[in-house]
Amino acid sequence: MFAVFQYAFIQNAFLAGSLVAIMAGILGYFLVARGLTFAGHALSSIGFAGAAGAVLLGISPVYGLLVSTVGAALAISVLGREIRERDVAIGVIMTFALGLGILFLSLYRGYAEQAYSILFGTIVGISRIDVLVTAGLSLGILAILALVGRPLLFSSFDPVMAEARGLPVTFLGSLFLILVAVTVSIAMQVIGVLLVFALLVGPPATAIRLVHRPGSIIILSIGLGLVYTWLGILLAANSSWPVSFYITTLAFVVYLPVRLFSSHGKDGRNRLIRKPSSFFTPNFQEAVEEEKETNPAPSFPINEKHNV
Amino acid sequence: MDRQDPVILLEHVGVNLGGTPILEDVSLSIGQGEFVVILGPNGAGKTTLIKLLLGLIKPSAGSVRVLEDAPRCGRREIGYVPQRRAIDVEMALCGRDLVGFGLDGHRWGIGIPSRKRKEKIDSALRKVDALDLADAPVGQLSGGEQQRILIAQALISDPCLLLLDEPLANLDLAHQQEVVALVNKVCRERGVTVLLVSHDINPLLEFTDQVIYMANNHTAIGTPDEVITSDALSLLYGSAVEVVHAKGRYFVVGAET
Image (cartoon, rainbow over all chains, first blue to last red; front, side):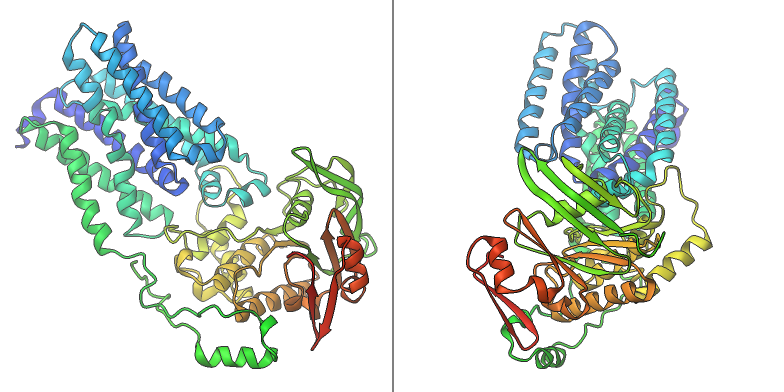
């Protein structure tokens, strides 16, 4: 099974795939935290139109991808917050982009393989140059993340406070989406534009259910992404099935049991039941004592590392 | 800063948002160490006033001075507890992380975890009596506990002015008392000036120095006894309002809430 490693193209796929898994694991976490996963999916669909258009024009699809995803990222971040989160608006734009991409592909008279690999990724088509470009872009993304990671985290969880503390919240939002756009572009090589979501959202969504500090979630998310990618490439190399199928299936197969069997729940917690305020009680002190009697303070194991 | 200088000074301030006047000709002065409550119905401009002081909104008329300086974002001397945001159960953040944001969340670059940083965070949590909640995911805590952690977040930069926007909303009785007692402690023991927006004066009555009552594009300022009277509020609202003072509590009848 591991004999496939002697082939240069498999090594390239592994290298590019590993870089993609790392970037997707980090940025995917922020997508989940900011509630922008659907926008992330839209970026990849719009990217598809750009990539197919580039192929039609005879240029490398990655450039078309970069231009259209970064453009879409800027457009999405400029739209007001409400529109950004409105699934319908994003869905309509996204399907239009997909339609355009289908048109471009149908007009294309060249190699069908190329069209296929844009949509679904490939393990055979990645060259050393591609790996180097991917590495360069990944390093760039990491450098920017090292600089803005902390304020980005703050503004993801509490944009109001972040702004009050003087952070440029809108700028950070735009910068973040551009980083996602670049990640989607490099991910295309391995998993194709249609299924980037699995690598971008699958690992962090799983990790969030298992650990609870941002640092740990990101590390676990990267780990899961790497495992899915490596296994996916290995399995695809030893069979005739597509690599993106394996990666998405692995992501699904791990996410489902974690989702079903880990609970975020407030199970076993004894919460104080909300009582109406003192306005309606003749005696304020009596009301407080009464409440203390009927609803003793909750006791729950918060000092243990409770996996919820 | 001289004890006599007001911490907050507004002179004939007006604020227009999207063409609608929210504040008109507001003048007020708040001294150091005062516990001030901002009251009024929804939409009266209470949050606008807070945002003005934080530099999030610019006045369209008049002058605003906060701690001897023009208001702007990012002033460490001002602590802010915004209206309670819905803390998602999904939010995988613990109390320690949240308070840490207040300390250095706004700084660029990767933060290196240090013992000194951990001690500062622990100390802030201890002061609000929330150290045992430090490692629990915040989404799992009760409203009162979350509020305590958010107050710790606001206090960690050792501010001399604390702004709280509806800190008691959606809290049950016992938790309201907790939060009020904590804020009062901070005010009296540390000399922090407190500006607190609330719907209901009653949980705060015994601690309040001044009331800013905003309604109907007008503002009335004074002690609770001066402002929360039938005459004063009727004037403010421009319609008949009755204030019933019974058993040490105020009940406002006839005004929208």
